[in-house]
Length: 123
Image (cartoon, one colour):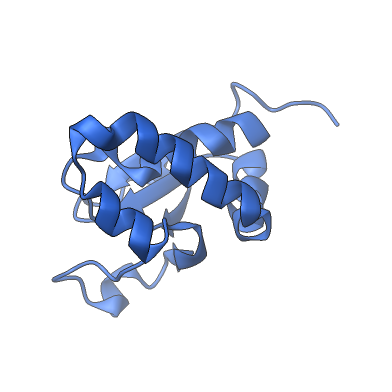
């Protein structure tokens, strides 16, 4: 099967940002529903909470920049044990642009960025 690298994009956005025509398939990748967002507001978004970090990992990390490198390692290990949860994201990314949505304040050190990198490697 030919690689589609360069034809699709995997991007990360805060769930509170407005949708864009360039978003492609949109997936909420948090384990908890975002505060202040009604479910009908995200009716066209697929919630794949199974790809979120475990509650224990999320609590341990606490978005502490000092723990970022170790968090990435631990979260990748969790994802490797839960490969089936990635299937809808991988399939969508092979078809076109995917936007991963998270409520995290600091997107650059979020699980969504790690997930994006894992998906890029798999597509």
